[in-house]
Length: 247
Ligand SMILES: Nc1ncnc2c1ncn2[C@@H]1O[C@H](COP(=O)(O)OP(=O)(O)OP(=O)(O)O)[C@@H](O)[C@H]1O
Ligand SMILES: [Mg+2]
Image 1 (cartoon, rainbow, N blue to C red):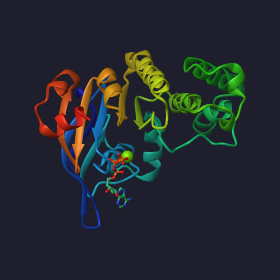
Image 2: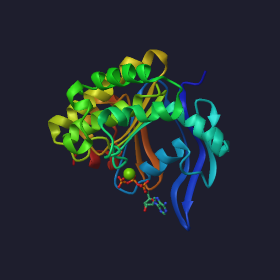
Image 3: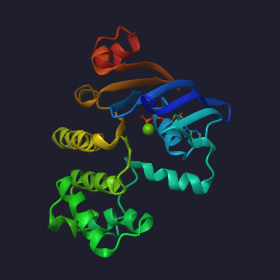
Image 4: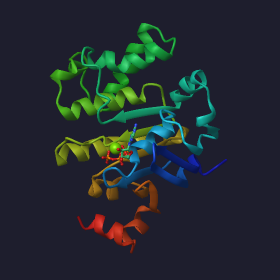
């Protein structure tokens, strides 16, 4: 078994003449929390879209849990995506559905669970992310930003994924709520790690990143500048990293 749940092999992505990802070769450690850092436009979201098979490489391969995801057809890809839970900055909740129905949505879509099983599972998930029974029946517009992130996390976890992907999950939140969401991501990670669970976070929040990650991948201009465990990262002498750490 590989020590990585995700591997990039000679991965390049071009849009027109522009090289967005430039021959990436690295792996994301299984059962660990990895944060992808980098300035705006470095290619972080593009990389995450390759993990999900939402964007296909110009060349090279993306191996997820042993499968080259860029070689799957649409049907196989759709099925394969059950391995992922996603919390994206802008992939908001369905605003016409209550918290309960938002979390129930993937279960109704992808499983044959009956109403009673769905209710059990959804209320458990909402409870695990700290959403009360009362808030379960409110619409997203009637929740705070932090609560909406929690509901988004519960929805991402509904299908018991093996890989959780977060693209800037705390943008727009105050520092206290940011740390609460990070605590929740960490708890989620450790509550699931026994059956194989990898967390990948794209973040701009350097303080939270250093506190909560096992590994850090630092990207610049479509390349990986540094890929280190968090303690080594803090000591990196690379001037780009130093500049970022001193911001
Ligand atoms: N579909 C697309 N077509 C053309 N160019 C694109 C496309 N998607 C992304 N890009 C370009 O690729 C580069 C990297 O974008 P990406 O969204 O991956 O950056 P990022 O590191 O996530 O930045 P941010 O921190 O601002 O979210 C940018 O220059 C962007 O304009
Ligand atoms: Mg981005």
